[in-house]
Length: 455
Image 1 (cartoon, helix red, strand yellow):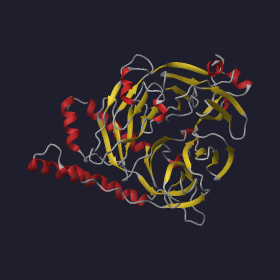
Image 2: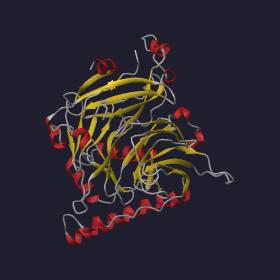
Image 3: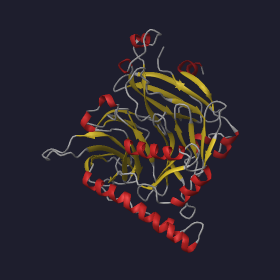
Image 4: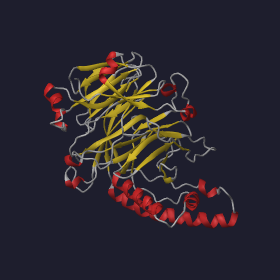
């Protein structure tokens, strides 16, 4: 326990009566329920089971419950959860087992609902490259990607910000009271403005268990230069441990999609209103006639690693997207260089492990820089990988890429590693906020943060 105290700092406790709705009170509830999802923000934790979202802090603040509208006929459940955090806006993003992407305000109001692709949404990934690192011609590098078996979609951060700002401006005006807001949004149904996005099929080497867009990549050799942008994607799964694709942005198709996205919902909303007048039903059948997903843009396979019976299970990206830590079914952790597409490091004997990248002050000079005379900058920090090995009851911190193990921390059974979501619009301005890793003890409710410095 002394090791745990010296290398972590306790922040507070999330224990509350409301947590019993999610299974709290039973030993191991946080880690043993496959349908329990967690998403951390700097001051809030969102937890969800199949149909309920609970937002809580680690103090005596209010707890918020949100029950998304799901289809009981299709046995639809919440399958992915993430925060979307802009400067002045904070909302909850939800992915469902039917392929719907939904956004809720912290008041529980539905802001946006859109079919991405029929299928279970496995993960919502929020990431961005710091503005200071981007060339001006590359535009926005902030995104939300949606992972579905064999499919990956990308929503641009600017588009999401615009639709959220528009919604909050409308709701903050005095045209609607609270009751009419709820009624109008229920009646809109599929009339939500469709968020433009890109959609790719990445199933050439089998369906994926996880995937990520790792960044922008150069166009193919011998291809005429154009304004088109290309992304690199890495997928992991049962048939291929690791696969990689070049994703074409396909601007021409997205332009047509953008035009259709304005026409189709408006037409559908009109038809829905007319049908309501005719049939006077509380839940009209027209809600089931969903807008079809858009066509796939081009995805070109780059490489694949097949190593039966090994299966890729979980993937986590470094902040820049240049490294990925991948866990597999044989208890190994692979460190992948996502640009060279080469495995640069391998750990063995870590079954059921979870990994998160973090930044630490490692050298003595950097540790001294944390004094009151000097705020550490990004260059003072070193990228590390935190590995939670639940079967061993420890967390290890390893220096990247090939550095030593810096820490071994004992942790209680039933604990989970968490990391705050990427905040849109963040930059390298001082003071620099390093990438941190948090530890939640499900059985006690205690939340701690791994210390930034070894000292």
